[in-house]
Image (cartoon, rainbow, N blue to C red; front, side, top):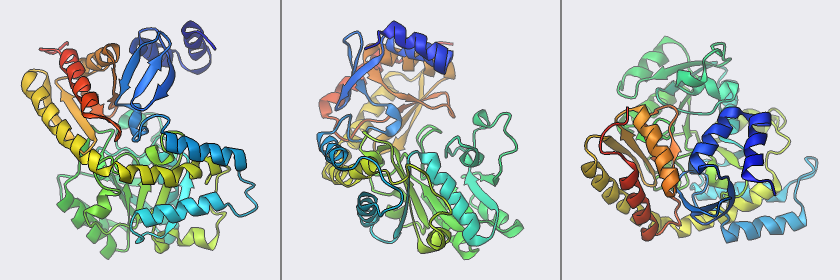
Length: 408
């Protein structure tokens, strides 16, 4: 096994010097080596609590039920021929549509979130015969070229103004914004995150979303809820949009869908949105789409999430209490806390303070996820398997890491 020094040298030489630098700061010269449950072990022997991993480890690292399902499939048939029927993907699709209640009967499997954002927009344009897509300010939908057009932050689009999708971004504080766009020119799709993760765990106002969804439907536009980060009970429900009764044509899922073990994402959608792909299943395909190992993880992941759902509500209540206490203890540095369920954002007074806190947390034993679209905010993403003791430990570390005054 490579030493930490060798790993950082390889990162600098073959990936990115900046990745090496940030990884070195976060790990204090050590690298990740093993993980189990809510903890990651570093090369220097330290064990740290993982409330980050960009929302992937909802049921923790190496969940035994997921590992067993994947190992069984590995011993049976680890990859697909792409010519014969794939029973593992078929079972996974059936499980996923049933999990969301059956109103959205069609599925397309990808690997990353951007994969299914791309196919959702592509199918919406083909199904409607329209080119224009409406997204929301503060939204994040990926960094591949088509998905990037929907992502609001200019940080990721600098030098790429020629993105190929015609997109306008709505202000969620303006309920009339969509009506104006719909009457100005035809719209193929409305795409939104019910809770904006990369923007600092910002829940969008449900009355505005409901109005927009209904207006889009009346004008023949398709509605896509991007729940790649906030879905699968991360924010309390299997689907935030469906739980709120929003009339959507698609829900996008990903991140923890492969059980925190394998990459997997999914577009779960209506017959109307899926119609171009139903007519030609090769209209949009990928070599590893519906991969047997990833799809084998899906049913047991959903079962595990549901088994932990009530516990997740209790964890959410503990987060409310802990974040309120943190805010009162650090009034000069914590400006606000936001979020829903197990997706929370702590807004600090400035980006420098937030960056310092992220590094201090890692040094003290708590991994979190920064928000590049809102650099003043630190994201907490505790797994569903966390205990009350884990949360207590995390808040002790937060209290020690957050300074009494701004660092800039």
